[in-house]
Image (cartoon, rainbow, N blue to C red; front, side):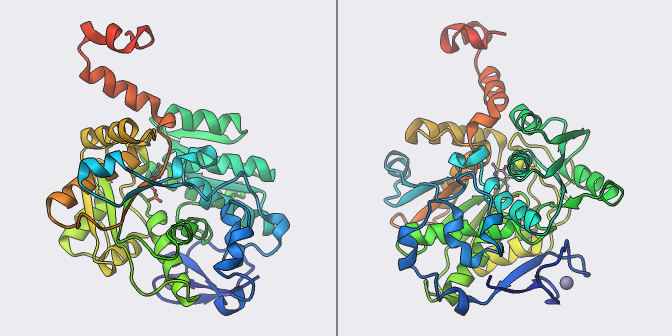
Length: 408
Ligand SMILES: Cc1ncc(COP(=O)(O)O)c(C=O)c1O
Ligand SMILES: [Zn+2]
């Protein structure tokens, strides 16, 4: 194992490895530090060629000590697809989609939970709890089932039904809360001590982000060790973006990539855009976004504990934060499906109108290599797509256009 210690992402305080932690005493997220020189004794770019097609191929830079604790459902090594038709339509000659919808449980959340639950197993935990916008709960339920660990999940009552059902089917304890993910988080915090739960909320434990950072490693590996010029990423709690950013630094220290970084574009829904608002105001911390609403449930995160990490990465990379409306993001998902055959989640769909705005503003050169992240599968959001179809199809045309199954 190559972990040397944990450190606070804000105050820098260091913590011994091998113990249970949530946040730093200062209230900010903890991160894992590695002896990368030691890791590079066995982990080289060349050594990856013969390894398994899951995120565990990068095990020397992951925190699990005993390989027997690595849980896998085949997460990671998702395709990086060159888009011809979509790219052509936008005038981009190098547009790619990283399709995270093909992960186990249908979203990139599998990466974080695979690593966090493996660590929970290694540290002997028996009961995990988390608030979730939906996909994280589905992933946590699946990896807990695999590990034989109890999962206690708190989701807003209007979370997509597929997310709720998949958790129940996997044997998790599900509580639906009349409120937002922040209310769900407060409920976990209130009950965890009495119930003996370990809280695996986004960035409130140090290991989910380690799983997410493999997104960055994969991008580099799939791009033959040249990172793209631009990354367009839908942002809720921000672990995807923050994780990738950490991965880039590690790979530079390993000597795998140079110091050039992609411009990180954070995409949010107009109905819940705390990061966009803070970015525009030049602030390092984002205020809680009032009355958060969006059909892209994963983006309905009004307050993120890692806000400063997201905003630092965006600014350091000379990126941007952009909001798109629900109409735009659903239209984006439909266009990705129509032109590229990928049934994207609404969150992934949000990247497309954001990209268009950047092109319109002259912020992207047409030959640049751009990677758009589809973070989940549209299959989990049938109600959202169905509602949108019904809303824009005159009642008289519904049956002929859509078939009897959609008749109301
Ligand atoms: C499909 C999808 N995309 C994006 C996000 C946002 O991810 P993060 O919280 O890591 O920013 C979520 C979170 O639930 C999600 O489910
Ligand atoms: Zn601290």
